[in-house]
Amino acid sequence: MKKNKVISVNGLTKMFGDFTAVNQISFEVEQGEIFGFLGANGAGKTTAMKMLIGISTPSSGQAEVAGFDVFTQAEDIKKNIGYMSQKFALYDDLTVKENITFFGGIYGLSRKQIKTKTTTLTEELGLSEVANQLVGSLPLGWKQKLAFSATMLHNPKIVFLDEPTGGVDPITRRQFWEMIYKAAHNGTTIFVTTHYMDEAEYCDRVSIMVNGKIEALDTPKKLKQQFETDTMNDVFLKLARG
Ligand code: ATP
Image: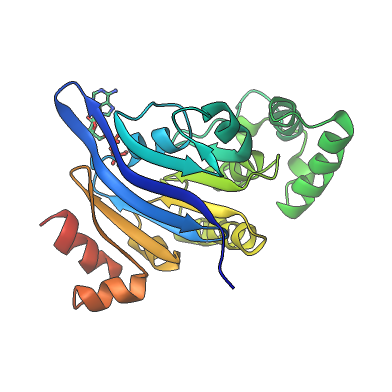
């Protein structure tokens, strides 16, 4: 069965003055796919992602996200996606419950929906006992899981995660990836940037950006074959570091 394309990008480019931060990138992502978006610091990942989530207008090229055009339908894109930035947005001085209520409100959920979501989410995340504690007092890994759930509150078609696991230990990262798998299994498309090469192995397909261009794009298995190595780490080093 042919799957839906939920992201289509063609020749997408972003210039800052004379500097080309994203240089004619093209790719497609299917529904339910976990798409890894890799590149060294400054390669252009965040800039590309900002165009895809409708907060930065491209200089040229084309892109459709969730069926909407990045140039003319950015507001529709925002309603249909979730986004978790590197400095994920939870309020440290609100409790777990209050954060869920706040983000539920932003995403347009009714009071009843928010109440139900608060119960199911805190139970699923194992946070029921700390539901009334300030988020600032929780370990980083718990915060990240809560932040991911907050970006999923409105059941978005696509979730964009910009280095979601930066700074957490391998066990917590693994748990985070279990949440990603579950969301993808339920049909949500995951677009994720990471600097952890073990995480690149968990993706269905991986693109590697070098100086604004996509230099490789395939499944981790095929990339390893193509670059004649056993690990994504080596693929990355061969490409991103020349
Ligand atoms: P990291 O892994 O460090 O987050 P990245 O791949 O996300 O890196 P970007 O943040 O997209 O990289 O930056 C790509 C390039 O564009 C960098 O050289 C950066 O300095 C430049 N850049 C990003 N935003 C702007 C801006 N608003 N004005 C000028 N240059 C910018």
